Length: 584
Image (cartoon, rainbow, N blue to C red; front, side, top):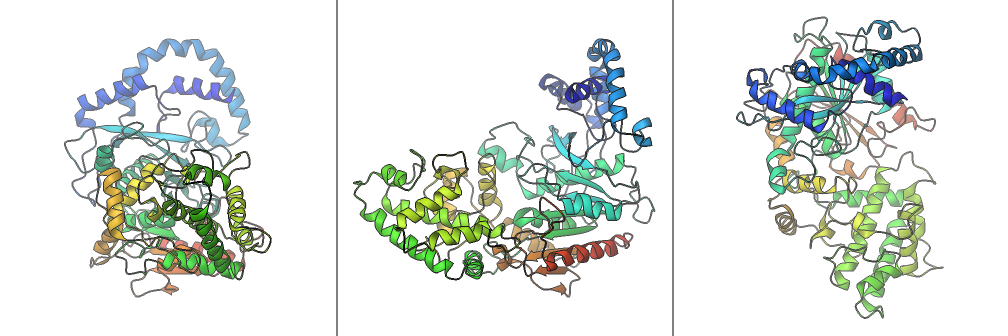
């Protein structure tokens, strides 16, 4: 019934007057709109001539509506009676809120932009395919999320969550905590080529990825949407105006945290404050960090959680290595894999020998520990990290391959009968070298491409925990990326950061947070407090991977340092917001 109401009101009123359409527009209508955009080039956004030259935006949704209005008119008459009834129910479902009565504020026709229980995507139809090619006038429909639950109107901040591979990551600390405290609006963008944000359609070619997928394009996407929403919220452009809405970017993890910080540096005329959680700024190949730092940190945290964990894991993998090499299955790798609980045909075709199989079995364990490390908050006996360690410590009662089979069983979904190794191993001959941080099968190819083209993260090895783990080396990495995508890896993100960091106008108002149990903290900015550049860093002893930005907030079991961190972050951001007239 709710879907019918939404569809009816969408047909009745066309595109949302503030943010975009209520539902994805039909393919034939989208094609018509693109043709109109090309013909009416005078209303098309001017291309950015540089990374810092932000273009102004024109909303052509009304033009699109006028072209399509005639075909909808007859449908409108048929639905008038139904819409009246539907509107009555929708209206009454929102109580007596005056904004829902008259469609004021940022809401139209009783349809809230978003609620915590019912997030809704809107579409910016004028998103540029290529922000840096003035001859490319192709646009696409870019989804984004908005919550104005606590928004007090112009003059209050815009909290921009830098979205990535995960849909709808409205961190409650932001959407329910900071937004309420500051009277702010929450905006979440979605990174191009992930989720529903497909600028060239499904299954893009390597050439298309190389042309249109980059941190620079993603940042420019976000800036367009930010300016679009600012204009519709009637926020002033002049920072000295009482109606100016300060922009705070918020990103978590090594890529999105990096992007949040970079946006403050790349677009200081748009972004006022950046907050980056668990962003290892020094992890790239040329970041100056030991290539083994990440997994060595994972190993140390595992030993702190369960003393002897790393040795027990190492010994199991060593014994497993011997068992695989000497198993009686006469070289039949599939039979060996099945004895470990791996699905038939569940290993990549590139695994052609027992030696390579051993390397990959070690890689699966490393990936599991890496994921468990990220989720190790709060430190608990019931954590996945502790349970994994305990499996490998059962050396007296079980054999190595039995322990490994138990480990794989604990790693699969409850309804799965076997473990699919393809779900965690990359394709290619050098898969054992690859990043242990996957973003799921749907976006894995895109994530892998970004690692190849835009950054070189040497996850390294931990010889104390992972027996005979293949050492990371740039030559094999480059070979893998050239085979898979035809690109040569460069530490692009690190180079961008270094370039901007060296600039004499290095922007202030940067906040970094780290969980000290997080493996990525080994390559993060760990200066606790305010450094000479005015950048503030907070370190949480009990925290793991962006533990303050979890899917729930607050938690009854939050540790004292994280609880204090919520207060510290709020105070720091509030202080900077009050200085909104200062570009530095």
